Image 1 (cartoon, one colour):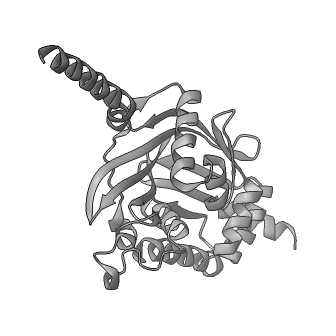
Image 2 (cartoon, helix red, strand yellow):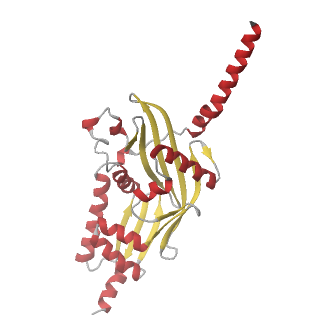
Image 3 (cartoon, rainbow, N blue to C red):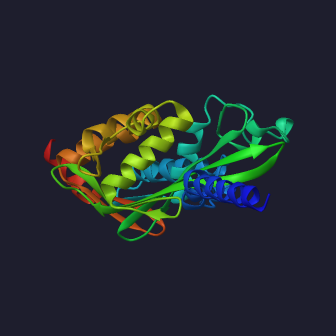
Length: 274
């Protein structure tokens, strides 16, 4: 009898070890707590930018002494645009009429229990941190959280394009070499959404090209102008002239993307045409 108990305990121990290695360890390593900036997912995050844009364009027309136009794309505006894109097919998201449903709390829902919190950015002087978070939810309770964080180094205005180089990828608690981290992120996203990482980026990114082999994201001035044309045609038309005459100055800080247009030179250009 004692021999049987020992054999049973050994088998049970082996099963527990295998379960931990195959299930428990991945869950521990892939666990990541994330908190989406839901306070930025409001209309005022957009209106602040558009109000400033209207004021600057009005000053361009009215004030002949104005030398510069200044605009700032801050985190709130960027994250609001991303949220609208990801949640466009989910009218229940943050809608108080559907509070208590999983679709209220998550931009996208996969199956019945997996919710995508979203994708959001944090800006610093020389980097952009992009975070994505997802939860496994049962009966309204979050049982498991995971996430992905990508840190881009910023290189502005290189060959008429803006270049972001991946500096680090963290999947859950794992800080792997870039190639391995990208493959793992692609595997997880494919399992959750039935789409590859490249497919997901292509579907939800309105401009720019992500190159997984080079770990980089590039957006040309032409692509950026075409995208902005969809948002504000008059501003995009102005940008085309600005790019051509090299009147644009861009900088990045923890407060956002700062865009300065040298209106003084632009006015002299118009005078020269007379």
